[in-house]
Length: 283
Image (cartoon, rainbow, N blue to C red; front, side, top):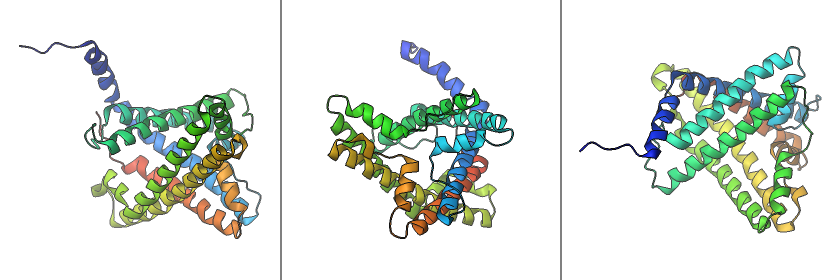
């Protein structure tokens, strides 16, 4: 007896065909490159701040502002925006269709991973929206988006607990990045047969250094969210820029900030390598 299509399958099949379009892969690769550019600017500005040569600690939104203020800035930012949209699209595809076949959906770690992909898609969609506003001439309000969102959650029932749980989750993400950097399992996502021995070696080194730097930053962001929840004070929450600034304020701060800044630059180069050599399997 032929299997009848359900209303859900009638929706899923066109969506799956759209997700498997060759342009999805092109946009995903462009997205990895755009992400690399954004992190390069964040890392470069932080490195300049550590060296005392005029840079500043900022977040990804600040990196977009830096781009738009350059000659031909709107054109350059438009290209980056297309990449950010492509990266968000790819994260949505990963969250919904599991194109890389990470594992059975019933396994808790894979469910958590796909939730993480969904949250990443939302975050980069928001970053792309920020870029569009900058292109249209609407400057950022200069506030800390993490602090703003924390304040909103604090105003909800059980908001303090939600912020605390979010802090624990972000710390968990940071620790998972440190573990990824140690194990270097990210190499399995690359078309290693297309890479020379030197490229494989440098991809591993840059990936380990860069992902470890992100792990440190995420852990600090999570700790500040925990402090905000414990003290019921949203002003204690900090995002990427605030986490880098907190590093700079510690003993040996310029050294700590400089090392993490170099790690973010390493991550940016790693992302550019991903744009070229990452395996992107279609659903």
